Image 1 (cartoon, rainbow, N blue to C red):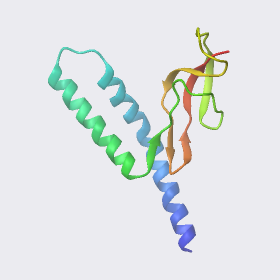
Image 2: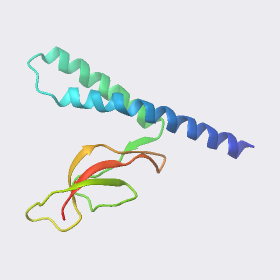
Image 3: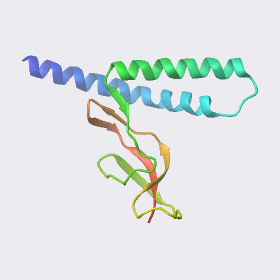
Image 4: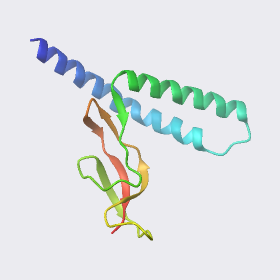
Length: 115
């Protein structure tokens, strides 16, 4: 029973995280967007940092992708992109970050790879 309860809790956390990932994506994009309003940017970055802190406490981590060998268990390749000096099947661009919950993928990283 305890194992079932722990599994149900983990599934609940994963479901909640999946619903929050688009919010994290938008905050990340806003934090990296050019702006002349430094106070605005500071507020967005603080909010993003707080979200990442909460995700970390829940056991949710970002999947490393850029310049990594393509791994179909972690990455979803949506395009090929030639890149000088890189081996075949190396991630060259991350279009959408991927995340794991305690070692289990909750969203694959959407990437471009070298042919």
